[in-house]
Amino acid sequence: MSRLICVSNRVALPDATETSGGLAVAVRELLCQRAGLWIGWSGNISDRSEFDIHHGRFSAVTLDMTAEEHEGAYLGYANSVLWPVFHNRLDLARFDRNFYGSYAAYNIRLAVVIASLVRPGDQIWVHDYHFMILGRLLRAQGIENQIGFFLHIPMPPPEAFLAIPEFRELASSLAAYDLVGCQTTNDVGNMLACLRAATGAELLPSGRLSIAGEAFHVGSFPISVDSQTFAMAGHQPRNTTIKRVLGVDRLDYTKGLPQKFRGFAHLLRAYPHFRRQTVLTQIAAPTRDSVEVYADIRQELEGISGSINGEYGDVDWMPVHYIHRSIPRKRLRALYRSAAVGFVTPLRDGMNLTAKEYIASQDAADPGVLILSRFAGAAEELQQAILVNPYCVEELGDALAQALAMPLAERQSRHAALYATISRRDTTTWATDFLEHLKRAGADMRTRYISSPAA
Ligand code: ADQ
Image 1 (cartoon, protein in one colour):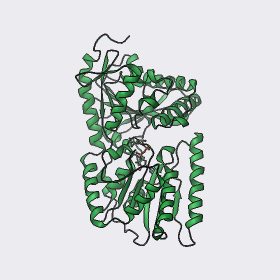
Image 2 (cartoon, helix red, strand yellow):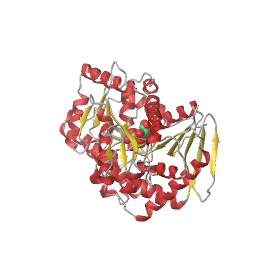
Image 3 (cartoon, helix red, strand yellow):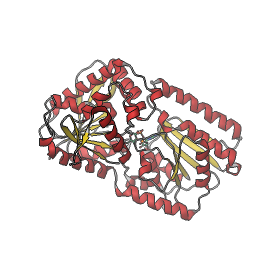
Image 4 (cartoon, helix red, strand yellow):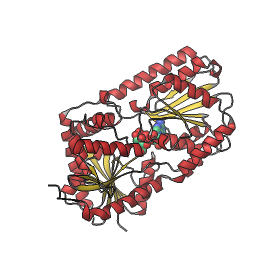
């Protein structure tokens, strides 16, 4: 069987006991089945240029970043240009010419490592915005294998994308992949619009996209969670006197946490009978602490939670429990299960796995209610959630009041529909579906160049 080579910013090692998000679980499973390789950053910063190979049921190949790569490629171009722009936060982007140079140099380093490891017939799957141009660089190394790219974050509309100084390089690099996958049909629409605007890309009658004669496929592959694992949350008695509203997010400005806290304050102000009967528990995992805007949001949240507790709290009841740390998966499942409301209100999100994890963890006989931002990719599938505009604090507070008072029969019917949706595809079907499409797209390799090959 051909091997699978996955490339992502961080990797899980073969002997790791707990893999965190959905992506890690799915990729790990497939790599075990196909004795594959997982290539990415070790998490260390040093001048070592060699890579390390960790052998197990699959192999992980890790590289250190130099301080320059970490500053320019990772914190700079990936997380201070692409992340904010792709989430429609141009105001937070730092356009610095040196960043792209570091990004390209780090991608070239990865391409050289992959070229030294790849064998004929291996499938290569590149993940996310850290490596948008890697496919083009792999082709420059003479690699003709099937190469797919999956974008985990939202694809922005052209007005935002064209604000990136290197938009042409990014857009035309995508044509080097056989298949480009996005989370939602909305992202695919934005991808087509961006590529048209940036490069004059044409949609061919075959459904493929062509840029300067080079053809490739674009499609939507919504990522999911392993609903079986979350369904094993076990019996968690729900506190009937104090209902828990739960938020679980990385502490990121895209997750809409200040608005979420203010929405909860609106509930306490406008619906005083919920005071003393409900708490907001927000678990916020630390992330990218060395980027300045992330330190700012942390301070802002501490301020808002303190002022809500100061205004409404009492010696025997604190309305906001704000926990700034990561928690083990098992504990997370139990928390999801015991929460009366899953409060998931990102301002923009590629998918948002916590929304699906919350649904998967519920007791079907007495399920909680999901409140979900319209601007999370997950909203495209999870239509029976209470869908909200995450910018509108009053709407968030009203949705909380509706969820907390929702009769059992309505909770059950909404949950049954949502659970049916997420159990139709798990992480493994997501990954297998993408790789099957890549195989078919790769079979079109012979005709990748429609007219004259790009120089
Ligand atoms: P993220 O932005 O990280 O992912 P999300 O999809 O919600 O967002 O995934 C977060 C994962 O981390 C979930 O599995 C969640 O359980 C876990 N997590 C979050 N906070 C935690 C905490 N405090 N303790 C423990 N675990 C915690 C990116 C994109 C998303 C896309 C995913 C997958 O931004 O839009 O859904 O990739 O493609």
